[in-house]
Length: 565
Image 1 (cartoon, helix red, strand yellow):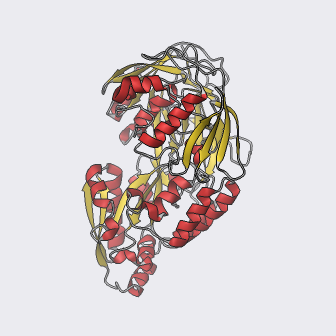
Image 2 (cartoon, one colour):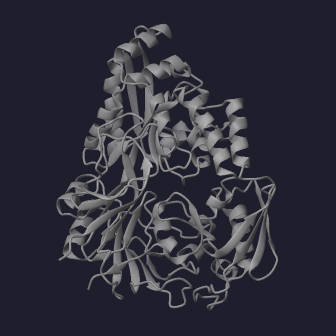
């Protein structure tokens, strides 16, 4: 049998210690650096222990399988997930468990590339943006047909469907999926030509059109099913939704009229397996081909069995401070709390199964706006220096503070380690652990009092800096969980608006870098980890991709999963 290969396809600068890093298991990998250096074989992720801005480079996506063999058609790809999809309506979905299914059934105007660094045209063949950024003229493919549903039978997709889907998302989605405050309407010119009109320029807009929340769906099916459309979605993707058994499985079947390359597999079955160890057992017995979202000991089991596929996710895990009330309103106190923590050791302690790697900034390393040099703005571990800063701030004997977390294993470990580190400089930390719903109720708007001095959570978005920096630091988000610490700065607000309104990426990058340098000098929190995406993959799976966003991509312009028979 040929040796299976894990191939790193893109890299993003991110610092990590080898003892705490996401790796590729025990399999051999071919890793190509961002600069185009020749591939070199290495075991795992090939990380270096350098914790400076010159640290290692980490793959942004990994492809698995025999890349030299001739693909074989047939078979059903069986994928396990720990939680069931609830609604797969693109205007209403909320979790990765829904989107894992949706990306195989629905199509978007654009898609993220293999490396999760840029977007590519998908349903559109070409497009142009006006000089003032207020209109996008696009041409729709003329060979796209909707799948057969209850109310539509293989109808050809037209620009009217684009208009309906985007305007529906703007009006009905509880989450802003189309820059709703800037997106105005779609003008239909012909069956294949349309113009998207904006009230103001919006740099992230095209990226939003690559998200499954902006998928194009037929009006007949949405209105025919009403609230039940989320369990009967119809689109133009490579697979058709055939069956949904609540909390058990979701079954897809190959779309015979798919406009792109035909899928190699006959179908996909998503099975709900809540326990990661049971999921590993199912892969080992051949009942499951890919087990997604592994955690804990199951990661080690998958690694030992040579089945682990692992990559740092694009989301950031962090602790934010209350910036307006209590001791942490003082930037010297926040700097001291940051200096008091050996973050490298903390990350290694939290993620004992290698399921996390070091982060530094409030911007994902997968973003085109990320600059590794800004990692050096994080103060080095210096507990004596931290004590001196506390004394300067008027707390020579320390103080009491709280940390609110949702009760998960990794959050509990993080909180206990911070309790130790901060205790070493005289700060007594009270840990308040609860359900996610209770956490949200306590943390949102917590900047209005000093009851919540800090809180821990994670945040994920696509590589556009807007999805992080606007959410963390815009005064307009001060009543949202992403800015529960109450960051507000008129100068930063103005720069965020300026960056958002530009369509030139280089110009936006320069402004976002100014913002990063400012907010990192204010010590708003500890942005300490990228939590890994962990899959167990059977030997018969080929041409599967694990990307930083952890989406299940079965058939795309850059991969087409097939199963060795």
